Every structure is written in structure tokens, then in C-alpha cells.
Length: 247
Image (cartoon, rainbow, N blue to C red; front, top):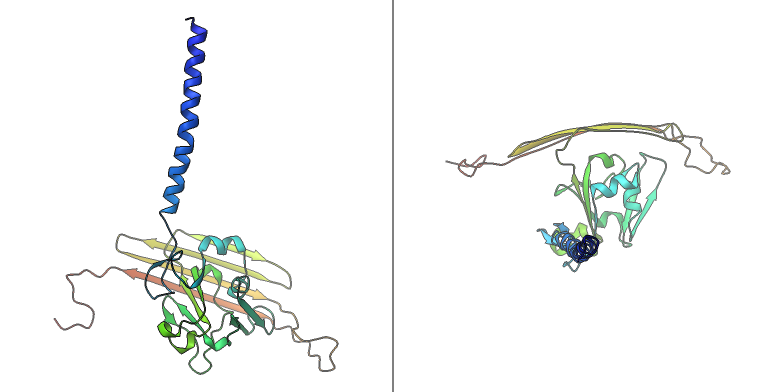
């Protein structure tokens, strides 16, 4: 056997081995991805695999929010199936949400597990919570009154604020004098963390009324909004008594 034939056979064997090994490696990577299901907590008020729950659920992640480039929470929710938005003006003006046709006060809003709707009206102001402060959103469609109460007849929208991460900044501009700037920074330790987010929004405004109407009022409905949020957490040592407990 000459040298050329030997080299050719070795090369063929190497190519065959690589062709067999590559699909196996891809399958292994796919299996690793399958082993990491999306976990939701809103449907049953406890952690659960989103693929096994019977409820209709949509999870909007931080990556989804960044890809959408939505200027506000109203725009983000309006892009989801089964949600209708009623606006009364430009950015910053009052808006209402209808989940699967239910009244606006029949959709429960939670921020980090806390009810945020007004006591009298049962409504939540969507206009002043910027997407930069949101880590993920869980939308559960359909009646959840048995778990969450009578204000969850239409469903539940659960907003989770951002966790501590590295520094970031964002600057956007648009029509009608729209300008937005936001920045965030965070610190994460072994048992505790702290996240800070601040932002400013300006909008010259546009008139929401009909210019052809006899009662036309050229009010531009502008917006100046400053927002600031703080989120922190810490692990309470098991050997310490809980705050307020009697030793």
C-alpha cells in the first residue's frame, strides 16, 4: 500500500467519523435546550412548566421586550393575542385594556406579586411603567377568580421588575418631539442584590380630537415623565428569627 492510498483512507475515515458525530452533538445540544422549560408562577400561584399548564399563557421575556423596541407597556400588551387596548390620546394619556372581552376592571394586574389596581375603580394606569424596568410579563387568559379573586375574571397580567445586572443605558427619539432616556445599574452578591433604574420621557404631544369637529380643541396633550425604581433582595439566615418574631 503506497502512501497516497493510506492518506486517502485515513481522510475518508475522519470525514465519516465527523459526519456521524456532528448530528449526535446537535441532538445533545437540542436535548439540553429541551431540559430547560419555561417556568411560570401566575397560573396556579406556584412554579409550573408553561408547557404542561392547561391555562392559556403568554410569557414576554426581557429579550422579547428589547426586540420589540416598544415605547411603553401599552404597546407591548397591545401586540399580544386576545388583548384589546383603548387609548384616549398620545403617550402618557389614560388607556384601558380588555382581556378576552372582559371589562377593564376584571383583569388583575400584579407587579412582583402585589396588586396595583386602584381600590375604587379597579383599574391600573399602564402609561407610566416603562419597559426598561420590566424583566418579564406573564399573561394568563381566562377566569382565574378561584385563585386570585373576583378581579381576575378576564385573566391576570403579572409584571416582574428587572433583576440586578450590569449597567445599561438607552436613548431614543421620534416624531412630535419624542425623546426618552433611561439608565440602569445593579449589584448582585452571593445572598443579596440591588437594582436601580431611572428614566425621563418627553413628548410634545398631538391633538386627540377631530380637527373637523365643531368642538375642536387643539390641545396637544404633551408628556413629561420622570421615573425611578429600586429593587433589592436578600437571603434571611435560617438561624435568625424572622422580623417581628418573639425569640
